[in-house]
Image (cartoon, rainbow, N blue to C red):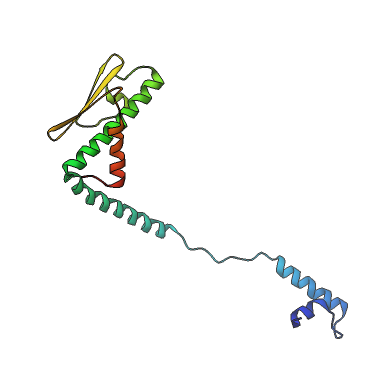
Length: 160
């Protein structure tokens, strides 16, 4: 037992019970007194600095990728176009399932892909996209596996 613990639990011979209880009351009053915490520094400068860094990195990434988009290889551009057509087909099918009809134009679906032509005839549709000299055509009801495969190629970076 430490001397402090001994002091807490026993009354010494030289102390009177009144002094002992005064000491206990004083300790309790000290413990009950609210502690003042040190004043926290403002986090505004830190947040502003982090915001500036985030904006700078975003700008750096945007500037760095614009050059890469222009230099897509023919294979990459075709795969990207196939994947775009796949997404448009999925959107068209969802629209048809929910409304029972096809939209008259892609802008109804907020699809504004440059180079993609959309034609509707009754309950069927056709999508056309030109990539270089090749034209990719999808007609409603056709197998989408070739378009869907484009996603796998893009995600695995296996474009040739």
